[in-house]
Structure formats: structure tokens, C-alpha cells
Amino acid sequence: MAAMVAYMSVPDAYGVVEPGVYRAKAAAAPNLPFLLHLRLRTLLYLSPDPLLPSFTAFLDKCATRFIHLGLRVWKPYATWKPVSEELIKDALEIVLDVNTHPIMVMCSLVSGIHQTGTVVGCLRRLQKWNLTSLLEEYRRYAGSKARYANEQFMELFDEDLVTLPKDLPPWFIDQRRMMEEEEADFRQSQESGVQQMNGGSSSLLTWLEASPVGNVSTNGHVSCNVQRTDEENGEDMSKSMATVKTATDGANYRKFYYLRSSPLTTEDRSYKRKIIGKVE
Image 1 (tube, helix red, strand yellow):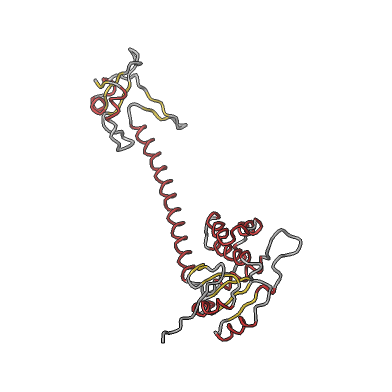
Image 2 (spheres, helix red, strand yellow):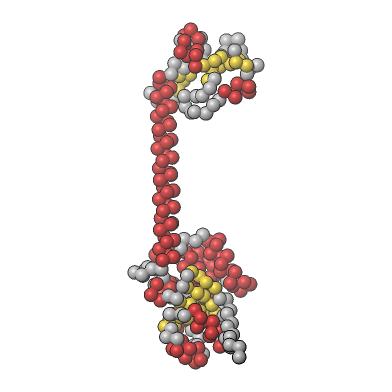
């Protein structure tokens, strides 16, 4: 006789938030075998609606800890916020405690996606997600039922309200570490760029002070004398520079141009002779 295979039905709006963290709407009787397969340690229920007695008995049988945060007031009085920040804070601290994993965040079939989506969105804020990715995930589960108030709450949520638990999950620690490394690399690249700019400025002033074609005044202005002859500049100057004449040059005007590379850069600039004019 063929072995009987248990029929497993996935709950509505089911998804994997992070390893060991799941989300879904309230489960029905056909979803219980699937939840048994997940081997949940904690079920975080966000809705004020009570669970079915059969579902409560199932949790007791599986030794799953049941946390009913929805018994508290979700929406504060006389404010635009769709949910209280204290409840989101408590939910995030439970989700970020690795001792509660595997954990499923769940809300009722009526209120559905909005409560769980708000908690997950604020979790993404702690993970330093950009707002576009955060809202895209929320709208993917909410569909046409997405609420602007929930999106605004996630955008303005104060991350400092959350006290990180002592035992954080590995994925959260790794993401924080990678973020800190990227920020350190970015600061280092900025500092090195500033140093290079400062070093380049001092090298420019040093070269102009020593160069016979430019004088640096005390106020930092540079004056160049392009009327000098080759005899005045000396043999060293004539070897490193060439006289370039263009169609707009007058009889008493000369341009000096470096044949190969400028003292300020290692770039080969000899190709510019074809553009500027004929080198004599």
C-alpha cells in the first residue's frame, strides 16, 4: 500500500524574511502541516483577534511559544500614525532575538498584510535598506491594498527606539559588519582624495615657483610671461619646450607647449600638436 503523503497548504502572504524569520497571514486548518514542517519555536501574532481553538491546541502540541502582541492597542489616539511605535519596537526586539528563531510573524485574515508588512518594513530600516526597496517589498505583499499611512510610518520610523538584543542573528550581524566596512572604505577614499588634492596643489605651487615661465605672488596669484625668448629662458628651457604657432598668433606672440608630458601630470600630450598647430 502506498504511503500516505500529508497535504500541505502554504498560508496566504507567506514569505521568508530572513533565515529563521517567516511571515504570513493567520493560518487555517489546511496550513497546519506546513507550519509543522517549519518547526517554529515562536509565533508572533500581531492582530487583536483571537486564534481558533484548534490552532492554539496545535501550538501547544508543537511546543511553540505564542506571543500575542495584538492584544495591545495598535493605533494611537489622535494621531496620523496607523500603529503605535511601542508595539513595533517590542515586535522588532523579539524578531531580532536569535533565541526566538525560527519565528513567524503573523496577523489575522481580516487586517492581513498591513501589520506584518509594517513590522517587516521597520526591520528593513534597521538593516539600512533604501526606501525604494523597502516600499517595493511592502507593496508586493499588499498589492492594491497598500496604505500610504503605513508607508509614511516606515519612512519616518525612528530606529533609535529599538534596543538591540544581546543575541543577534548571524545575518543581522553580517549585514551590519559589511555596512560598517563599506562606510570605512568610503571615508578612507574621501580622505585619500583630499590628501591627493592638497599634495597636488603644493606640487603645483612648488613647480611654478621654480619655473622660469611663471611667478607666484604672495597672495597666491600666478603670472606667466609668454613674451620671453629662447635666449632668456636658456638652453634647458628650449630642450623641454617647443614654440607652437597657430593661425591666430601675432608677430610678437609665442605659445610654449610641452612636447611630451607636463610636469604636473604623466599624461602624454604630444598628440595635441596636431590640434594646436605645427611644431617648428
